[in-house]
Image (cartoon, rainbow, N blue to C red; front, side):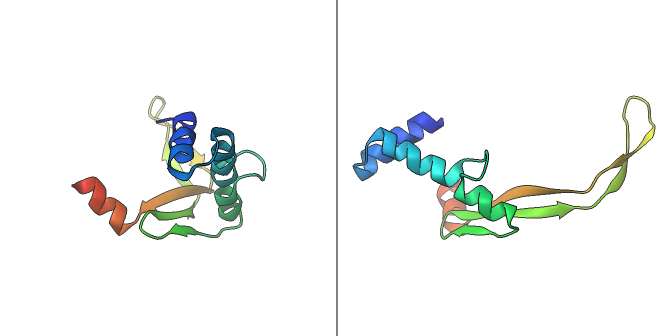
Length: 97
């Protein structure tokens, strides 16, 4: 399912127009600029928890030394922050059925 199909289903389930549904999805999930609510919270180092669905958050990976597989040379891999999603219990149980 892509964003357009998700917007259509949201419109059908809520009675919103498709364009309003798309605005809602963009307000929540947009990752460009400062538009998306979830991305903005993750930028601030906060978690976003949707009960029954899951938790969005960020983790920090320390700098480390790796090996280039083709040359076997040692390389330095920089530290970085990365996003994660941990599904909630209800979602895990529903998918497992």
